[in-house]
Image (cartoon, rainbow, N blue to C red; front, side, top):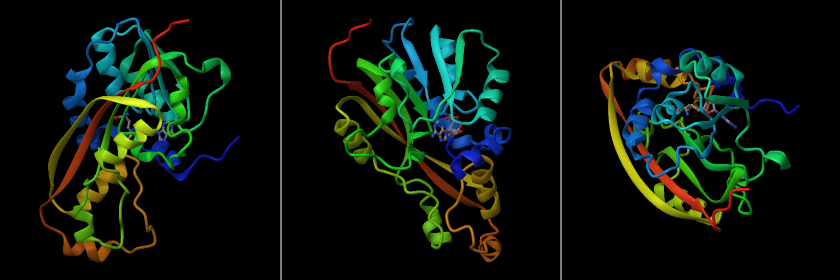
Length: 250
Ligand SMILES: C[S@@+](CC[C@H](N)C(=O)[O-])C[C@H]1O[C@@H](n2cnc3c(N)ncnc32)[C@H](O)[C@@H]1O
């Protein structure tokens, strides 16, 4: 068995605090929820990195019948199960960055995620998104992703930590195209959030399971310096892409 990555361990520990702190991520879901349209309710759908089920709930409300919820962290899946209490979903522990077994290849009509793809460790130029091998020809890949510039205020507050390396909308578009997909929809949305001080910004990030780089840095002087109201910016991308080929259901 492979060793879980530090990010994975962190998300597992934060399964119970995620929902109360992930306000930007939940508002991004509110923004995109009306955009799922013209998909057959009998489509086979796989959600990756589903976490506590905030995106799953939207699809189930719309009446999709063949829905597989997956996440690499069993603790996240347990929270989702107890929140959704649905007998219409199948649950799977699944690492989105690993290729799946042969029998699962090309099973799904739609693969979807929210607030996940920014965590991808690297993108191979040959097969950019490994999970796309699970998608049938002409299947849809539908995602909502935090993008650059997000949390850029950190560069001013604490230049020593760069919380994340966000990609731009154009970079994401190119990655999907490099994987043989055509882009059907691409939209962006910016939101700003107010916090009472830097400590509360840091706490909210920490409680969603995200880790800041440069863990050895003493944050106390920065917390003292920015002990006043401030705001942070989040930018999100909504992307719908279609796999090449004609649709054939086996
Ligand atoms: C920021 S949360 C987003 C959860 C949910 N999609 C949402 O929008 O509320 C990221 C989720 O991705 C999961 N995750 C992280 N790495 C993953 C991987 N390699 N494969 C599948 N899921 C992963 C985490 O366990 C966590 O539940």
